Length: 134
Image (cartoon, rainbow, N blue to C red; front, side, top):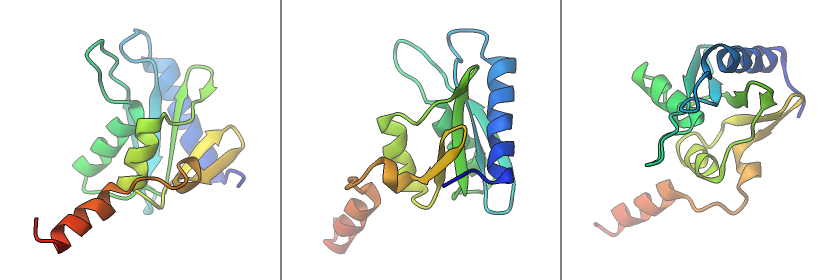
């Protein structure tokens, strides 16, 4: 699906953040997410040899810190443009915000479920364990 004006604004915020703040190799990707009520949350990845969160995961944490647990749209970018989410981010987004639309190109957004068909659903696994009394 093509980008809405709100999606283009979200992308512009991610690009602006990437261009302003990704100066070191420790922070080379920015992300922006929008809640259903229009609030925007941004974040940078934390790159370290021992691992670290991707920018999309930082956005989920920033949103949760403000009491928002579902996002309408999310995008990641470096200084040159959109970066589609990695496999781990696709899985986390499917589990935590299964209705989110992901901007995957300058002109296209797709439901996260389209990025991870037949995904393992952690939330469904937990629900099954709870039904079994574990």
